[in-house]
Image (cartoon, rainbow over all chains, first blue to last red; front, side):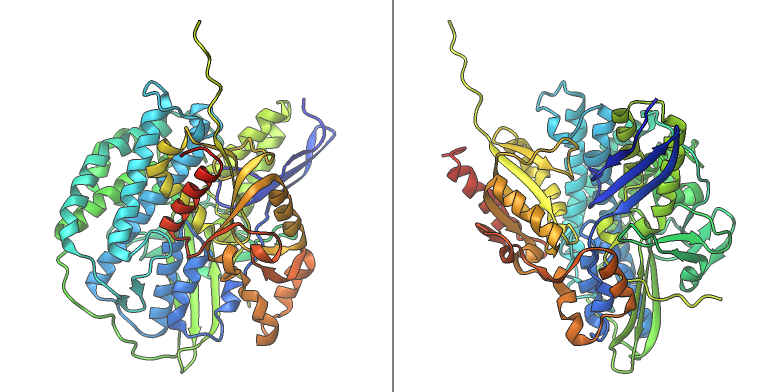
Length: 433
Length: 168
């Protein structure tokens, strides 16, 4: 039986710094704190008083790995505030860029951060160049998958991190379609490697269950990361503009990030890939469904480790969706759509790789931002993670500290949390009745 | 009798992240797609919390650092890294110039410090000003860009592979 306190100063193999402190008294967890340690940058305050057109590129800098999510959510918020409706071509190109983001970002989390746990090693750096090494092929799969995601991002939006080409109303420069056939070929070739990854995370028999409340965006007619309504496992369905009314804001005194509960039931909930596959798997690409039906039948799942499997499935969906787009799109020369007004309020809700992301922009008659708000997925998952860990430690205190620490890190890692996101905005006051 | 050759010396690297979006680290994980195989015989990643759990700070040849410095406690961490490393390479705009992470440095004059911000300043040890690395320690080389410029970063790594006698 473990006795005494357990501290993990900094959780490793995640995006940014977070720690954990567990206080044990008389064989029970008397206190547990999961705290996000990144210092805030107050970017939503920084953009106030600045031209709205400049905000998306600046707010992309909230997060390195999901910069495209922040960029697109911010563009959507500003475009809606200014009465801009995107062309169909711009919408499809953003969808393609988003597929590329998911391919790269999920592969980074799954292979660089989680795969060492699956293989029972500390790090991908411990995988040798010996082809007999069980990690060798998977590591090279990850290089190929990530590289393809980055290369498509470079071609469509100018970069995988802080992409320069998307702008308010459209694109500053359109992609060269001559590159598309080679991408289609590489996407086709990578499918078998992606399916090998799906099998890896399916076969990793880890289990931890507690919560069963989920929230995600649901597209009208497809598995959509950018447009749709917000739905929950309780059957709620609300438009993007009402998103923040669904939430109860919770200040966590020891964390640099705030947490959220569902305002209707004052309960925690989970956002991310597991929520999307649990609630939207009927909308996955038909080719994806056909090739991995044996793995899909295990959803809906309340096992947090299945967030990894859900991400691996989403990679294949994004590969298949990207192939469709690249085969069908005909690039026509067009300029960004011009704003019809300058003053307004706009909301952009997208699914970041790790869950629902909300941006709200309010502009004045000169197009200057007078208010801005961001709610990120990791802040929403923060209370859920903490409650999971309380349950985990209470049920497993008989184990050795080393084993407990490793398992706690694995549970946290399964959420694919991002601390950069969680700490780099300032919540506005909520006026809720 | 065959002679056993001594283990080949490697460039001992530490990767560190302070206040920022971590985009430079993410770019580095993309660079690894193409360079990890070539680097593994030449480089030991002794400290890299994004990639491994068992990390050590001692005896670094090159500390590669992203992000700006938001507090006195972070200044102390940075000084400890400097004391343990022969060379320091600052990567990305936040480490090199402070910005955009240092955006709050102008909040006072812009009248943007409200009760919510003051609450964070009071609860945690935020320094009055966010600093670039060079405001706190000696920096040997800089890779600017947001995210860092990839070619300049690769040139920087190659420079220290040579200086430390790992490659000709």
